[in-house]
Image (cartoon, rainbow, N blue to C red; front, side, top):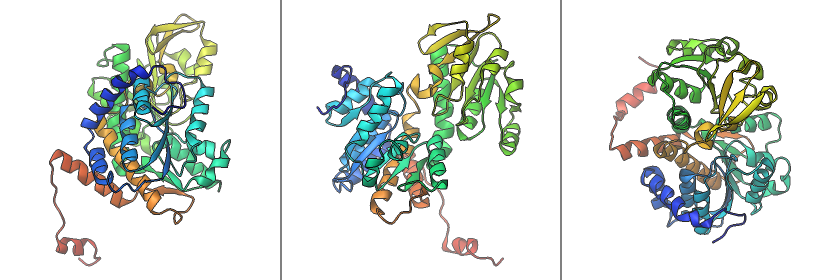
Length: 417
């Protein structure tokens, strides 16, 4: 066993192993990559530091990278999303693990640093925490990094800010922006997993309720779509007029949060921005309103403002805190305002993460194969990688599609009628 931070109970490892094996059973793309690269071992002697929500699907990605030769150092990307039994299973298998569920922010930051201290050549990030450290407190380790991959919208936003300021120290692949990631993971994965978490934790009916969805990016599209499918009336709040038009044409009401706040039974944020729901919005909400965040960081709901406003708070159910506001009304906030689908549940379905993590693996391979020739910029996932993932996903379903004839290709490539 190789473990450099206390795993609460290494006896949990068999439980974690079963979870990983279940995920593996439903991840044919990663299975194929493991079979393809386990003998060739392209990542031999390559050190990879990974910070992604540490649960079963992520653990299997780590194992596939290790099977391809990588020396893995693993941590989580949220203080509540690590599953201790999964972390224990990876540690018991000999992997470097720095993650414990429910630690404070100080220990969480320390785990991130510990995961970097084996002098990573490639980083796989979720939310930009590793990249942030390498450009700040642990700049001393940045010279070892050839490049990396970013999993989520929030992280890509942070990386693009670094690029605009001219401080990005190594190339980063925007895995989140791959078609085979955001069109499916962000929309279908988030749509299903958010409502799975909310319904499991609240045990309340969604049909007949009014759901307020903050934002109308790809994640919010999935959340709104699934809420409507469950029988809810949906109101979308937006700052982008084009996205607001999309929401309206998709059949949803559109309003500012000030107007939506008194109407909602459930509120779900997925904007990537802070203070999407403020204390003043909370004051306007009806008695019993349920609030959840589906954005990466716990800043979308103004938790400090709600805490300061509340006259009383208590744990109403596992993962749900009740706040009594002035005037006696209650609101309920799930998972401390953190990423509800992973901090209070199991995250996206395995089949969805199979596509996203195939993109991570192939993008890390792209960084390795192009070491030294990539600019210190945020790089798009290539059309070739997207196409490969899509074809393998279709093949796993046993589906075939048409191909262009040579004549059709010439026609599409010509300006002549």
